Length: 362
Image (tube, rainbow, N blue to C red; front, side, top):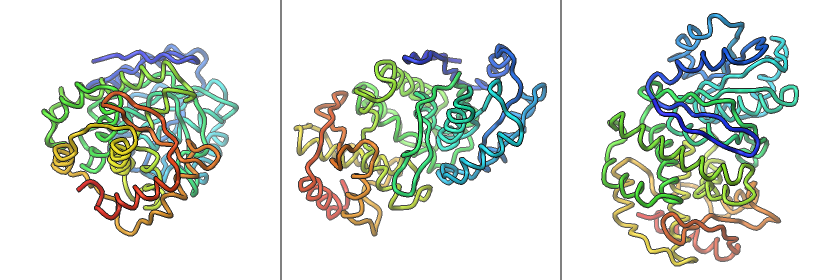
């Protein structure tokens, strides 16, 4: 079992990581003064697989379960409103606790419910996906709007994160790729040694050793913690965590939220950002071996068919990181050396067309 301290300006808390980490949750909840009730928000897939385990843990408490759709389909106004209605119907109050039990989408939704119900109540993250090693840490919570991903949200830090790696065994390969893309991101923006280790040691995501998985999760969480501790509300260096996300979010929107996993869309976004970095800030990077490795892992390295440059440009202009309609990208001067750059429309349009015509980086 490993414990990683997350320090932010508003709150400090622990991430407990490892097999059976969820067993540490009840001793933590016992310490809550005057706890009145617990609302568990989970999705249909996780609920079917693991909800009985959580119910057994919570049997001494007054709790109820709210089940929402799986993946990004959970992050809508309608589902968010339904969760608030359910909280009111079950008479949650300011001494209640919300448990986010699921992947990144459930964590984002449940955290936003917690942030806004009665102007904010505590919540705990119990992640069940690899992707959630990133989303469960740092306090960003949100729902989507048809015009943009995570456009309606808040910063609301959890009380704790219990990351039980036993829950990862049932993940389908697409979800493994999705989560692993964020580990690659952390390596690219912050840790050359980690990137080299990944290239040399990980060649099959379906059969990663438990020790390897816990090692990369711990390193990814630690990298995020280092950045968030400096900049909780993304006024500076936290923006570097958006590497690959400007185009990635646009791809997700064009495909329809939930139809392409977040990480796989961001992976394509990172490839384009690497190409931009080569063109604009002089990055020296061995694309051929990197692309071969990604394709060995099963990643798509080109834009999905039927996506237009014009539509992607429009979505990127609506991205929450854009200011005054100017599109901003995180680029790399070198591995571990990110920079924030505003890209002129004409140049971005030209390079995006080239990326599309050449089939991405293939």
